[in-house]
Image (tube, rainbow, N blue to C red; front, side, top):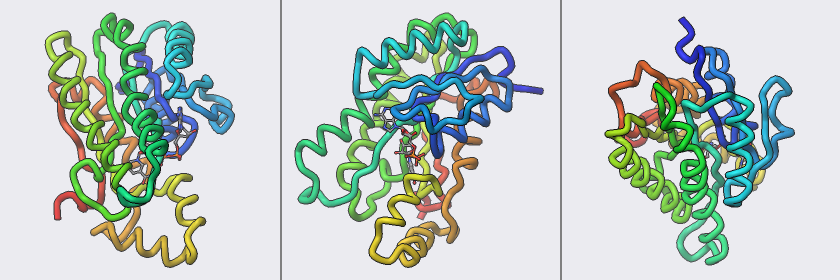
Length: 244
Ligand code: NAD
């Protein structure tokens, strides 16, 4: 059976990497999909992709309204758009701190505010936030990124509590290092790309990078009616790092 038949989803950052895998997975399960992305031209032509920067409140409101009109309603919001940052607390400027928190944390606040009135009209409303293993596990050179994802985890739990009695489920996934274009760029920028890839793989207890599809499958589970009894959880998809 197609679990998402008749349901509609917005996936932010759905033109690449994890978000694209989520959009394709939900679509294959019958969902109507609208992608909100800074660079919608990256998305394959069969996905309805709308340009929006999650750091821009007015753009998010406009794009969400357009998406809901296209979809004819909204059941699922996947907050996946996010950006990385490397370094210790000494390395990133205050401007970088503000920007990454603006995109990774306030981005979710903006899309959720725009989506909630529509989700309230759904019989199966759900929000899934794409968080990170860094929300619960200290890794080197990720101070700003970890702080942003720690906030996403806390926000997920708070939103789950706030919307529990109106039936809107809110969960997150915490991926380890996922083989996406972003991680590809990180590897390519290293002095020794081969060594960088091996170091990232070695950090995963499984010895392998997580695939975007593995994260998408976890997101699809949390977003769908079969997870109807699950809210306020973080599902690790990290090859075991957080369990060590
Ligand atoms: P990616 O760079 O491959 O894709 C991110 C997508 O988001 C792109 O299409 C990009 O255009 C879009 N985007 C970026 N900034 C945006 C903005 N301000 N507004 C709208 N769209 C924007 O990255 P990815 O690896 O697929 O990462 C997706 C999410 O997964 C992020 O939240 C990231 O923090 C999280 N994550 C990634 C990894 C990993 O190892 N790749 C691990 C844990 C968590």
